[in-house]
Length: 157
Image (cartoon, rainbow, N blue to C red; front, side, top):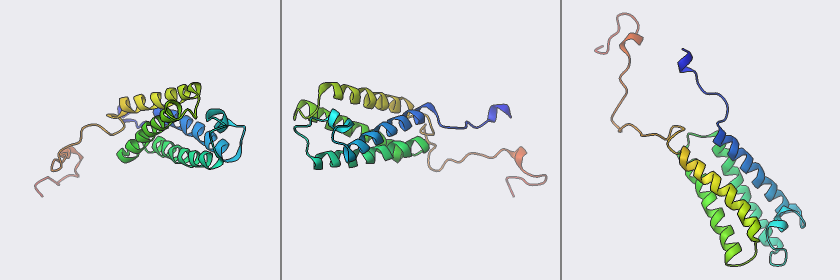
């Protein structure tokens, strides 16, 4: 039975997503409650309003929640897709803020590219694990092992 042991705990991708979620929650906190904090250090103080900071905070809180949900529900395809897309959207949004609107510093964007890029690549590599492998056709069923039935019971009964 040693070969049939279940894995316990959170896998490495789950721990990474917990760390990213924690970083995102710190960013959310700073955007809500601090003017000279992580939020204003990331986004240009001269071009960001309080409303813009709070909007970014709520959006980041949503993506933070997705990271935590995904870390503890590694078998959920919809959560997997939603979390992956949150990284894609965040990276697109922040790239536009830096390159088009110039409201973000390139150095700050590099940090987000590292975090989002690492997360996206890791999630793509893990897509076929965690129960996301090939599925059996709909009508296919696994045949039970006859030795597991009680004495006198057969498949024909």
